[in-house]
Amino acid sequence: MPRDPHRDQPIFVWGATLDTASAAIVMVHGRGASVDDMRALAGEIEHPNVAYIAPAAAGHTWYPYSLLEPMQRNESSLSSALRLLERASAKASDAKIPGERLALLGFSQGGCVAVEFAARHARRYGAVIGLSAGLIGHEGTPRDYKGSLVGTPVFLGCGDVDPHIPKRRVDHTAEVLGKMGAVVDKRIYPGMGHTVNADEIAAVRALVENLTR
Image (tube, rainbow, N blue to C red; front, side):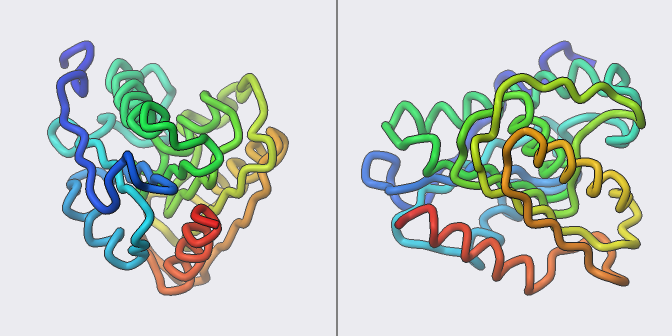
């Protein structure tokens, strides 16, 4: 496996232009998916003043194994994915969009990468949104992240029977991010599998609306 598989991957931008947008959202697709899936999701939450920034994973996969595996098993793909998210986020900062108007949003494996990125690069974000997502690593992974999320709104939505994201990992993620200073809205949906529901879309819309105020 290449040491830096996502190094040369493209980053797509649409919506409001970065030089005119009042806010930006980095959107991270799931395993086996693509930026087109993020375009479809953006269409559900479309706002005229938002720029959408979406990196594309090499081979449609951010890291090879389950998020519950020891961190080292998913290297060096995971570190490469996090560097690509850093480059995607830099597009907003280079355009003078402040951190409190930048949101990170991902679904499934992409949500895990987005949440892990936020924890490792703690600051005040406009929002961090993990749809069927949680922090990466085996049970007992040290969560000694540095810095503070400084009141960042965090939304975590997941089904209680999701076959890929155990409820206990969502609970743990909410606890860790809360201790880092985030304001966490965790919603566990009874009987829901690995998908996104209307309540989650409504919550995301509300967060996006707040980004642009």
